[in-house]
Length: 133
Image 1 (tube, rainbow, N blue to C red):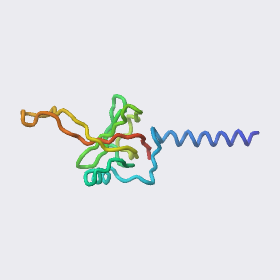
Image 2: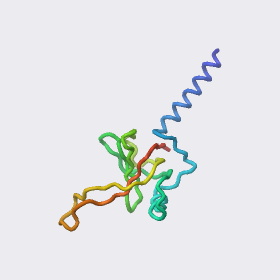
Image 3: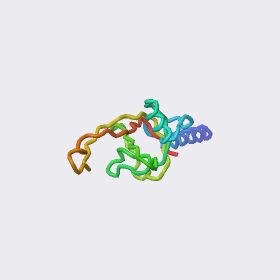
Image 4: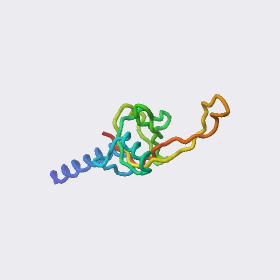
């Protein structure tokens, strides 16, 4: 009986530890490519679905409802369509995500004259799941 309880405890702690690193849909890290490579492939081929990894630049400090990947010359915002949130302290950490690129229409608030005012498209990534390294 003692061995059975010990075995169940070990299995349950292994499950809870693995769940701690995963939020949302499962992420197969073996199939992941860098966010920079995925963004390039998206722009060249139009393919939208990817498993990506990269360094987190910043995180929504209100709720953890989005984060951005740092591509050095650009940031890609990752949101979750209100399905889940991520911890607010993950900036500068490596993170995997499964999801797809999409175009979001934004209002250009920084326009200084009417020729630049209006809407612009921004490429974002909608994550169905994330996994922490």
